[in-house]
Image 1 (cartoon, rainbow, N blue to C red):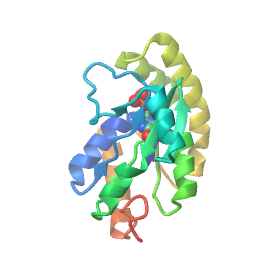
Image 2: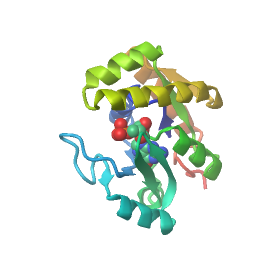
Image 3: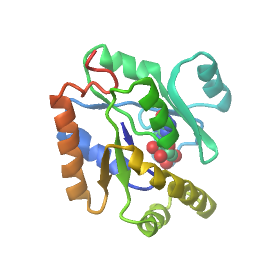
Image 4: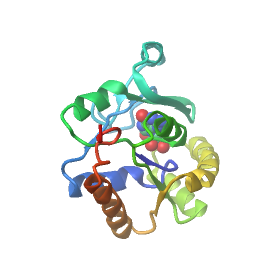
Length: 190
Ligand code: 5GP
């Protein structure tokens, strides 16, 4: 799984990773957040109403779920299982609380924390992305300060200073995990 603050470039890095290591597949998360322009249901996220999301929580359908910046996000068990049954290694892109839950539930899952070169760089990126209102950006930055302190919990930290370099580092980490048989994230070595 790949974690790190919002705006750090997890999505872009994961895109590069999936392109480089074709055997990996990305788990499509569920969220109550409204789609941004261009986002497609079932591709970028499963966009759910709060009621639908809650029904999945009650049904025990999530491997992990978290509240983040006023919305709910979660990984559906079915997203993982249908891939792991075929032996396909799965990548999760999740925020910190979810990453901690996955670490407890599936300790063999490998985790990488993506860090920004600085908090200032993160602010510039979040503002420049233009996908969130200024209040949302400030809210995400406050969360990011806490998230950054958590990076020491992770064995692998990749600083996203330059996309090319950070991609190389991430690919090397994931490649070596796959070679060790830890690739079926989570739980492939079973
Ligand atoms: P965004 O609204 O920018 O798409 O995502 C906000 C945050 O939620 C990001 O840090 C993203 O990685 C995280 N996120 C996306 N999907 C999930 C998920 O399934 N579970 C958890 N815990 N976080 C997620």
